[in-house]
Length: 133
Length: 444
Image (cartoon, rainbow over the protein chains, first blue to last red):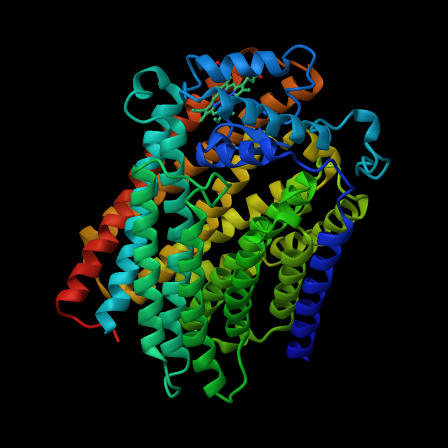
C-alpha cells in the first residue's frame, strides 16, 4: 500500500513537472544575444546576492524586475549606477559592452511581466488573477 | 574506515561554524559597507555564508543516514566503497567551491552561487551515495519502517530536483524568463522538501531509538504526515513565485495543497499534551533536548509558512525579510537542531556524564534558542515594515523605503552575533567530543 502511493506520487511529480514546463508560461519575447550575454554577466558578477528579480534574491539592494519601464528610474538611471556605483553598491568597473548587455537583459526581464501585484488582482478567496497581465 | 565517516561528521560541523563566521562578516559588510568594500563586499561574503549553510545541512543529513544505515541494516552488505567515494568527491567539490569564491568566480543563482561546472561533481557524488544507500536497502527483504521511506524519498528527490534545477543550461528553458523563474523555484522549493524528508526521517529514527518504541514509525498518523509532506514537496512550491505571471493553475494548486498543512498544525496542537509527558521522561537526554527544540520551531515556522502561502498575504511578505525569517527559522531552528540531535546521538554524548560539558552545552543551547527567537521576530518585524511601506505606502525610492527597516535589522544583526556564539559553543563541544572518539573510544 505504502509502495503504491509512493510510486503514484512519483508519477504525479513527473506529470506535473511536464505540465509546468510545457504549459505554464505564456509566450514572451525571445531574448536577444545581448540579453543572453547580459544574463551571464548578471550571474558571474553575482548581482542577485544584493538584488531581486520578481522578489527573489538578496535584499541589500532594490528589486530590478521593472526598473527599465519605471518612469521615475529607467535605463539611463540604471546605466549611471552601473558606471559609477554608489555608497552602497560597488563599482564593478564594467566595460561599455557589459553595461549595454546588462541593460538588454534587464529590459528583457522587464517585458516578461510586472513584479508588483495590484490590489484589484486579488480574488475573493485570496488568490491572484494575473494570468494575462 | 569508520574514522572516515566520523571525520565527515566533523567536516559537516565545520561547515556550520564557517557559515556562522561568514554570517557575521556578511552582517558587517551589510551595515558598514564603506569600510568593507575594499576588503570584501557583500556579494563576495554571501556566497560563502549560503553555501556553507546549505552544505552543512545536506552533509549532516547524508552523513547521519550513512551511519544509521549501518545500524538499521546490520546484516546487509554496506557498499562502503561507494560511501567513501561519495565522501571524497563531495568534500573535494565543496572545497573547490570555496576556492572559486576566493577568486570571485560565481554562478550567480540562488542557493547555487558557484560556477555551474562543479554541479557535475555534486551529481557524481550523489549517485555514489545512492548506490550505497539503495544497494544496502535492496539487500534487505524485511519490511521497511517509515524513516527508511523518508530517507529514500529525500535522497531520490534530491537527485530529481538537482537535475531539474540545472535545466536552465538548455536554451529552450532559458529563453523564456517566466519559464526560467518558474522552474528555478519549483526545483529549489522541492529540494528543500527533499532534504527535510532526509532530516525528519532521522528525527523519527532517533525518537524510536530513544524511546525504544518501534510503533512511532508505524502509526497511521505518522504515515499520513509523511504522504502529506511528500505531496507538499511536489506541489507546494508556488508561494515563491505567486507574483510571476505564469498560468493561474500553478497558484491554485500550490495555494490549495499548502492549506492541507493546517492539518499538520492541528495534529501538533492535539499532540501537545502527550509531548509534555514525553518531555518529562526524556528531558535529561541531550539528543532529546535538540529534538524538542526542533519541534518548537516546526510549530512557529509552520504558522508563518501557512500565512505566507495565502497569496493575498504573500503580496505583502514576498520580497521582504519575512522570507528570510522563514528560511533562517527552518534551517537553523528545525534542520540544524535535528542534525545536532543526530550528531549527539552518533557520538553517544549522552553516555558522557561530565558535568562541566553538560553545563557548557546547556549555556550554548539556551543562548542559541533565545537569540534565535529574537533574530526571527526581528526579521518578521523588518519584513512587515518593508511590506507596508512598499505595498501600502508605495514608496519606491530605495533608501527612503529601507530607512526604518535598517533600524530593526540592527536588532537582527546583534541577536545574530549572540546566536553565532551559542551555536559555536555547541559545535566546539561536539568537535572536542569527536576528537576524543577518533583518538580512542570507538563508536560502533
